[in-house]
Image 1: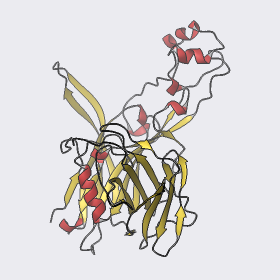
Image 2 (image 1 turned 90 degrees about the horizontal axis):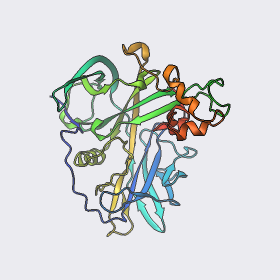
Image 3 (image 1 turned 180 degrees about the vertical axis):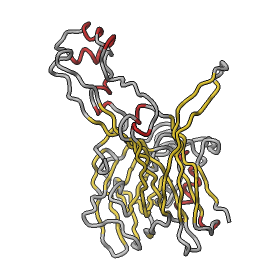
Image 4 (image 1 turned 30 degrees about the vertical axis):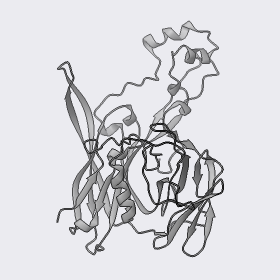
Length: 361
C-alpha cells in the first residue's frame, strides 16, 4: 500500500486570516534523545500579523515519569535551554512541560519518547533549471536536487507517525585585508558558520497507518539553486523525528498557515492551538511542546562537487582597489560607512544565521 506523505508545500498552503487580538501566550519547545535543540521558546502574541514579543523571567521545567525534573536556563530573551544535568531524553521515558509565567501555570500531559524507525540515505543530482521571465527571456540556474531513500523495518507497529525536516549548514570566509591596502585595525579573516533551517514548505509528514511496505525510495526533497554557500563545506541535514499522533495532527494544521524561512520553533503568528494548557481553563494558549525521537542524516558537498566558478565578493583586487583610496588610510570604519566594504566581508556577526562551529565540521 502506498504511504500517505504530506509535503507542506507552497501549492498547498492556504492563507489563514489572522484575527489575533494579542496577549496570548505562545510556547514552543521540545525534548529529544539528541544533545541539541532541547529548548523552549516563550512569547506573547501581538495583534494580528505582528511579531510576538519574548517573555522573559519565566520559570520553566521538564518533568519525567519517575519524578525527576530539571529547570531550564534562559540564555536569551524568551529562550530557555535544558542543560541535561538531571534529565536527558531517553527512549521509553515520558516527559511533560511546566512553565510559570507571572504566576500563571502552563503544562502539557506526559508524552512518551519513541525511537526512530527509518534508516535514511541521501543523494544529490546536479542539474539546470530554466524559467521564463515576464518579458519572455529565458533564465537558467544551476541547481542541486536532493533525494532520500528511507528503509523501514519489517516489524512495523500498527500505528506510527514521522516527520522529516531539512536544514543547511555551511561555512563562509570573511575577507582578507592585507596591511599594505588596509589599516591595521581591519579584522582578521575568519571562518563563519551558517545554519539555515528551511521553512514549513520543506517539512514532510508520514502517517504510518496507511503504509505497510518497508522501503520508501527516491523521494525528492528539495531543489536548491547553487550559490556561493557551496564554495566551501556545505551540509544538508535531514532530521527524522518520531512524533505522536497529536503532534502529527498539529503539523497537519500548520499546512493552513503561511510559514516561511524558519524552523519548528518559529513563533507562529496565526492562531494555532497545540497541547499546552493553562491553569485558567478560559485562557487561550498557542504552541506545542513535543517529545520526540530524532535521527540526523548528513550529506556533505564541497566545491569539488559543483561545476560552477564562484566569484568571491570579499576579494579586493583590480578595479576594487581604487575606491579604497578615497577614505583615510587608517579608517576601516570609513570603508564600512561608505559601503565600500560589506560588513558581511568583515564580521561573522553580520552574516545572517551565523553561529558557533558545529561539532561535525
